[in-house]
Length: 565
Image (cartoon, rainbow, N blue to C red; front, top):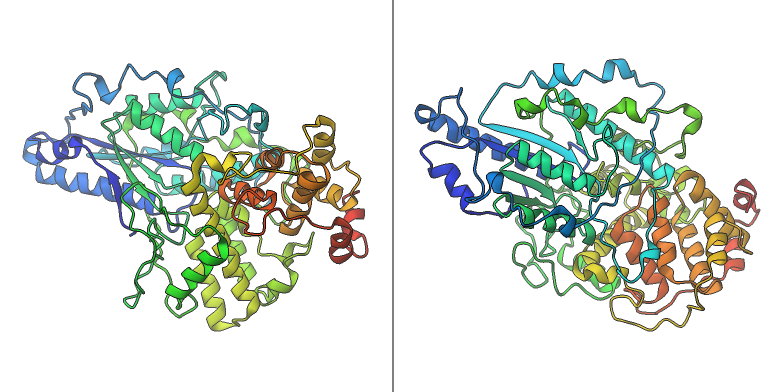
């Protein structure tokens, strides 16, 4: 298991030294880790509960199993609640109205969906209980308080559908293991300001939560939300795990290799981000590959074991069905689907695609085909599952290594690793620069010469695919229909918005955030900064010749014709 990063308080001492051991309730807040495999955060929660149960056994004489003492996390307020910290003062909500979705036609919903009561009631009452919740970003504090126009009212339908499919897949898996997925906001309650945050507080207080487990994230807004929760409940014990990256905060690759090279980068304290991240990607890549020369060797990265059962949740939650993810609430007809045929959200589909891709010859040709504008097999298509954590990046890298050992290792398989390094670089770039990721002038406060002023009509033309550039129109209509666009397409439409239309690059980044099924805060905003010349690109602004790119990547006009560009 990765090094455990915990924020502990005197409450931990109370758990172990008190003559009457207190009941523990561990809450896992899911965000970019919607999976069971290689999930250090979930395993840490299970480990905590097992430790508490071991302590309870040792204190059995003083702590009969039929009697519980509710933990008092704050000497002055029940459950550690700081009544002076009001939810309205801490944050306001970003609530999206999520549409329903359709699972794969071969899925037997009656067989898969078990009644919550019958599954959850099988767990026996113990000294430790587990709550697992997905609470979408509950902070509506904007990245740039002076620029609210860069926000959006609602996720695109394709992105919403992919997320709901991912949650449905996880919900079924958790029920099979004896627990369930709590979904916030509660869909049966009327929408109101602060709905997600208030529901989360209700969950914490009503169940006397003692510990919260989360995965580290580079998302500035999500971290702000966690901080607001820490302020409101200062006595809760927080436990952080790294589940979304190949490296830890000292930029050390996770591995058991004894011959590991000396780490590079300034050592970091718990909770801090590396301060000496190279300013450009090529320096980052060279340092990584120089110090971790064995990246394509026979040794795999450590992978967390998948749990075969889960601790029970508190008894009071078993029959409160309104709290749990309801698959039927999101079901729609087949004609309402928005995703490309190959994309289905969820860990199950992610692992199937992983095996399907590496069972083909596609990895050996990736570098040659990767810039194709519209073909399923010409790029890896892992990004959507990586973005919400349905697929572990370490699992992906291990499968790539296996392919290189058993099938072929060439420039194309290296380029898959190269793209994973780009993802890694933008993660740490976002973590380090925080809110600067959303600044007009970027991380170095650079002047932009491309902005001609705001023009709503031009922006709407770009969004709708009605510009004077057919290749841009085709790519935008593909995005609006499917929630996906090739990497080359993203570069072309971004270049058009920045240079041909002369608009603020953040309009484009925010629209991508709204629409993309593989939206990742670091990769999206980092790439837009890069193309706008205010980020990690040493050459400054990059402008693509759209006529040349059209002839190169759509010489027969097939993509333009298909998407009515």
